[in-house]
Image (cartoon, rainbow, N blue to C red; front, top):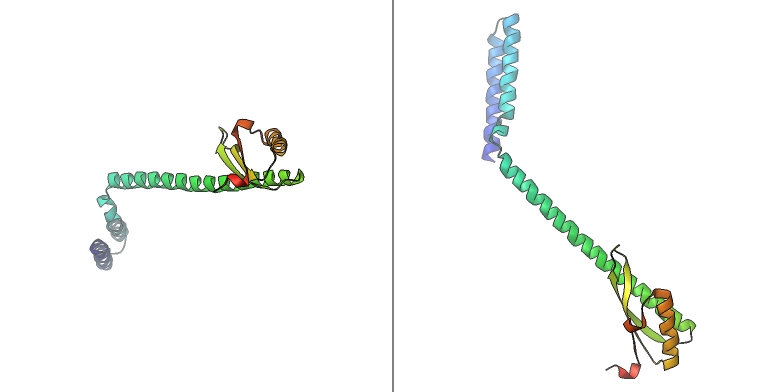
Amino acid sequence: MGGVRGWLLTILSASILCALADSLMPAGAVKRVGRLVCGLVLMCAILSPLSGLDLVAGRAWLADYFVGLELREAELEEQVNQGMKAIIEEKYAAYIVDKAAELGLTCTARVECRADEAGLYLPQQIQVTGDLAPEETGRLANLIREDLGVPLERQVYKCEEELP
């Protein structure tokens, strides 16, 4: 705050000095040159804080700011990806439950997805829980393998009696 106060006092002093000089100068070429000099003095007074700027520290602050901005952007992107992953897993689970209902089965499903190289979330592990007979499990497992591309090795079926 003291620096701003000093800067304003410098501008005020230069303005008063220029006004006094303008009133004392004789008319003609001398007055025109005097006004030019007064304008330059005022411009120097206004721009004087720029000479004290530490550009290296300013660049370092700006670089730190951009690094922090990139980190925050990465955090937000990860949050969005996790939210999308949860939504996609829920949609896959609902799809499996709907397909089971079409087969006349009642069950619940839990799907774990992972992102592929393109960033798409695809089902990797499926767990289906319900009171399912082995032939019903086989039909549902084949349907999931065909529709979702999840091999039988990554499909887990549990009977409701097995749950704690």
